[in-house]
Length: 160
Image (cartoon, rainbow, N blue to C red):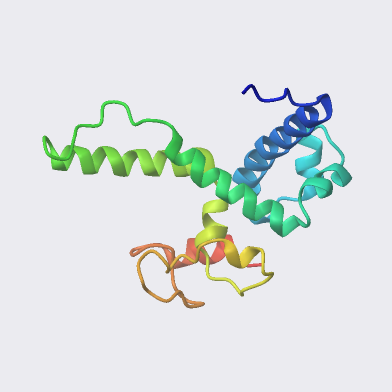
C-alpha cells in the first residue's frame, strides 16, 4: 500500500522544525548553553513563539540540539581511515583527529557546557550526559574536562 502524501501543514511543520534545529546547532556551537531562543529565532527566521510551539522550554531546545550535535558528529564517514587490523596506530590517530575536528566544527563552545561541572539545573538539562559518565569518574565542582587541562584558562571560560 502507498502512504498517503503528507499535508501541506505537515510539510511546513517539518520545514520549520528543520530550520529551528539547524539554527539552534549553529547558535549553540557559537555561544554554548547561553544561546537564547531569540538568537535562534532570528537565525531560523521564525518567532520565539514558534520555537516554543515545537519545544516546551529553552532547556528542552538545548537538550534536543545537543542530541542533534552528537548525531551530526557521527553521520559522516571518515575518509582515508585505515582499518584497525591493518594499522592500529594510524586508525587511532585518524579517529582522534576526526573526533577533535568534528567536536570543534559541530559542537563548538557547547563542548565546554557539556563537559563543565554544573549544578543539576532543570530536569531537561540533566538529560545532557555528565562529563564523568563515560569514564566512570564522578565529576566534581573542581574537576577539569580532561587530564592536563589548563585550570586557569578553563576557570576563566566558565566563571559566571
